[in-house]
Structures are given as structure tokens and as C-alpha cells.
Image (cartoon, one colour):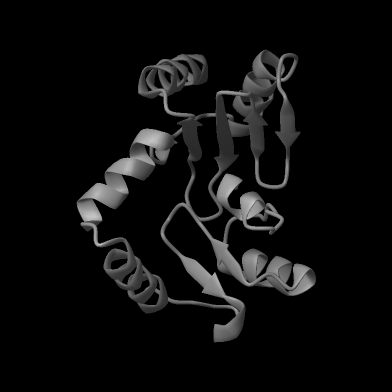
Length: 162
């Protein structure tokens, strides 16, 4: 989101899933939409998902930067360590999400409920949501250049989900 803002764009959240993302992109006249599951949507491709367009853009970036893919990925991972999507089966997902929200909401810098609960702090953030396709909750945790913090917060939230 920082890159979008620095480039003069405005990041917009959407519910997960191609139907929700395409609808939101049309509402906002967005040029790009993406999901953590590696789906990439482009306005100029009829708001459709394409894996080829991102790969061609990455190939172009590799040439422009005269860098390796490994180096570019390592730079991004160092800047924004992420847990990856963690799935948990729970007896009562709504109750678990409410419990996590009650724990983390008071000190939050920003809260978004577009898709589950997204809570942001200055140095880290997380999203916890029910799956649209499976009987699980999905957790994603990310920090700003602090892998230890990301790992600690991931473990902390997972412990509260038990």
C-alpha cells in the first residue's frame, strides 16, 4: 500500500474473491487488484485474473534493475516480513474473530472490516477472516522490516485462537 500511495494512487480494500474484487475495481475505476493467493486483476484486461501479465512485468523489472528475481524478492521480504496465509479450523469462527478484535482493537491505529477484521499498528498489521470456500479462518500477519515482531505477533494471535 505504501508503494501505491507514493506513486500517487489510493489503495482500496475489497472482500476476497474474484467477484468481489472485480466489482470493487469497477466501482473505483482501479487499474489493478490483487489477492494474497497470487491472483492479479487488471482493468485493461477486462478486470480479469492473469498470471502472465504479472510475470511479464516482473521480467521487465528484472531487465530494468539488472537484478535477479531472488534479490528482488529478498528485498521485499526483508521490508515486509509476512506470515503467509495460515488456516485454522475452529468450532466457532465468529466468536474467535470477535475475541481477537476485542483484544487488539483498543490500541489499533486503523481497523477495517471489509473482509473479516484487519487491524493495523505503526509497525505491524494482521487480517483474520473466515474463508469463503472452506470451514476455516485465515490469518495473515505482516510487519515493517521486523521478522521477530511478525513471528511473535503471529504466535500470539494463534495462541488466542485455540
